[in-house]
Image (cartoon, rainbow, N blue to C red; front, side, top):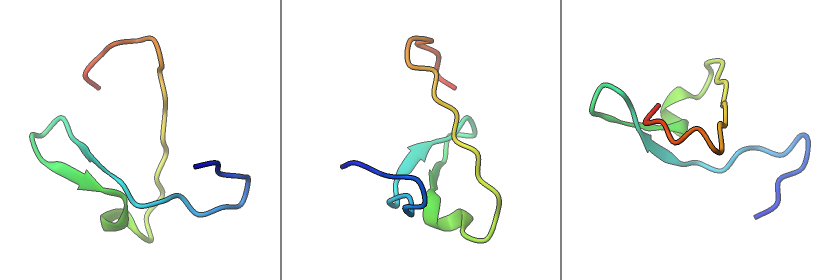
Length: 44
């Protein structure tokens, strides 16, 4: 899937550091910042 500037992000779910899953749709209406560290190999 290719996203372009202005596209809405697809809904996804990831584990959090609090041992719960976080779904993007659960954060609707809030500011969300996604940070990618492709070679960090860290759990967070």
